[in-house]
Image 1 (spheres, one colour):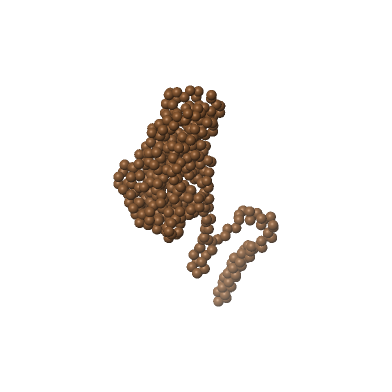
Image 2: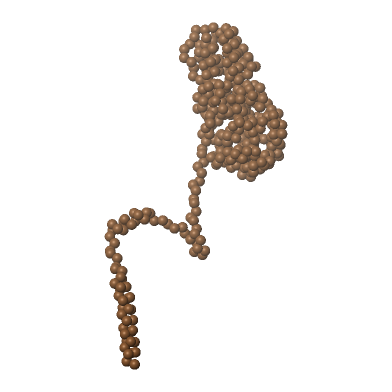
Length: 394
């Protein structure tokens, strides 16, 4: 019995010693309190961490993160350059035509002898400049008569004489104003037509800037539904000057879009509705019929005030055939002659008016947004002739 008691006591002693062996090491490994942080340590940690990042707010009811709204700056609305005096400011753009009229014609007229060979050279220069055969003969005949009767020989006198004949050939009595004023509570309607490649949609956007520069409020109708890029391009032009654009889906009925544009213009009370139509090849009868349909549908709101035909000056006499076909479909009231800065054939202005009896109302003299200028015959001829050549002949 005593033996069993000794064994139990021995086991109990072993258990007590084992428990102490486990507890003591843990007591020895108790963590020491942290050392006090210095200002240098704190700054170093902040530099490594970088700027504080603000977490997005969360909706307390749902726990869903809510991103703060992105506030976009409103688009800047441009103020178009005033149209008064634009042609004078852009006269240097006619440098290529100046070589024909200013240097070429004045140089020929200033020769010591104006014999038949010289007059033939003058005729050739005018025809090369796309003045047209009939107009050239009239100009040359009048120049011959006046130089003979007046005995004009000085460079300044010859320049004045040539300028007078060119201005006369441009028929300064034609009405070149744009009829853009609203009437009886309805906006004026301008229809812009032309062939592919003449820069029609771009010109349409520039015409809008001309109207806004002259104090009109404008709405644009993107009735060129065959090219989605055309509607996008027109909307970009309109957005720059704060104008509204009415457009339809790609392939929509152009007449329907044009009708909706005029309807919207009536509702918003704008001064002028400007409608861009699809560029059409004059030999495509179906497309020309479509243009006639646009005209008829728009006229359900009232008469069209202006139909402007956009012509590319670099096409020369081919542009006259294009213009003639368009006048058979719609009543063209004015011509917008683009790309005059890129051609030596400035005489196309004379040919267009003489052939069609339709005034050139606007001319494009560059790629800038405000490089479209109201046409003035006297200013245009002055720009064509350039500066007076130095010297004088007897």
